[in-house]
Length: 248
Image (tube, rainbow, N blue to C red; front, side, top):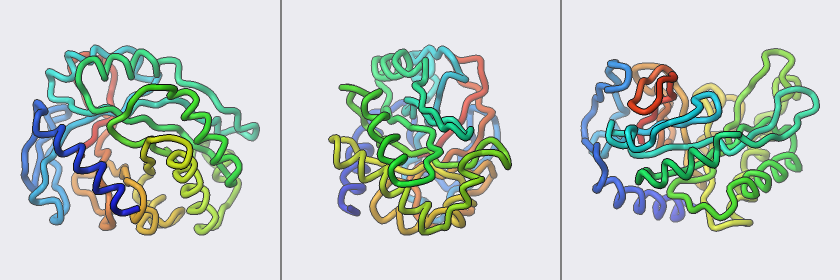
């Protein structure tokens, strides 16, 4: 499993060297919100690449303008599951135009599915639905399970009160289903607290790419991750909405 991640990262690295923005440094001043971010020491010798993740909430993006503004990768929501008791799954209405526009502009592309799975059967259903919505599109980055609490105290994942072992198995099941049923790699998106307390992020990182969410000037999650979502207030050319910003 570890070898799979290294292969994916090698492909990404090859693409990065042709990107519009790449720099190795311990600190990065984000051109998209003006704040300074300090990377963990273990990434001192790494290239830093800028990206966004988008969904129906950002509506339309001019991806050529975004690419010219230094955005080199996009992670696009393909769909999700509602956080209410019914837990109905849905497609993202802007997925098709986002993935086609981003790919045409030359960005590296991955997708994510907003999960509210409370058992392994739901994780399998979500993964297969994500693949169905993805169709024949090629990806450079993984299919990520966006695993997080939503809907406050009444949210279905919150109310499920899953054990850490159970939640970790659900996340692993989603990823295994993606990789067993397609040629795509799988990954996990979660915030720092979720990775530490709700699922075993360290264990999952041995097999799958980790996309960390922490809106802070320093990433204080010390286990492995490859992408850091550092802010939700970025401004990029080609889109007037607030954008989630990421370093890879």
